[in-house]
Image (cartoon, rainbow, N blue to C red; front, side, top):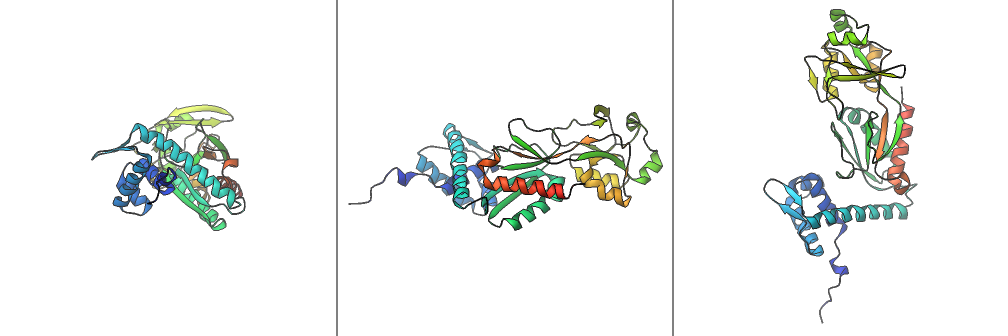
Length: 307
């Protein structure tokens, strides 16, 4: 008598669920294969096995895009839940308060992510070697749940209401320019003077393009600015400022060394813009030991080196 096939034999494997979610996030088999370090054929095979186990078509495949079927949308919700529960199980069984383990997927902006989050993550990995940390940087709004992130490190107080936010450290943006530019064009004495200067315009995330909202003594004021140069990348705009191309509104975290060296000079010091550093996450810290130790570590790290 041959082996009896049971429902348990047909349960989907966690690895197949991870492959499925990666395909959804990357919107392609090739992209998922690249991220997971396997071949596209392997990805296709695992998705077929998952569809066979669930007895359902999960994806519509065309030459241009991949779309979820109705069953695929249901499977996506369950996959996120099941894999989250498995991570929690590993946390609990490995005494995760002392030795957190598992994948931690973190996002941040290009400039702050590269210059400040990445060095902190390196130290975090040294302290907790059983963590697997993936850091991705963007200059756009990130959908934490939809893109599979556990945590976002965000600069600025425009926080998403649907998630939990914890302030890691206070910070602000200030106005500055090179001494050469100010010698050539004059030093602004009022907010209105900025309208007669070349201002380096940054289009970042949801910020209004061409408008600087600034605080003076607790009162908000706005000024419309313009200039011949603009970008969606803060590091590019900072380089233009160092080239003497105009006035910059930039985080104190980034320009403090340049102010100390005299390469940049602060102007209108009574004006600033809040740019606090926040940890944003979709689940309570008490539900995930790996997330909890990460947020606690980053809080200690940034406050220790705060200006």
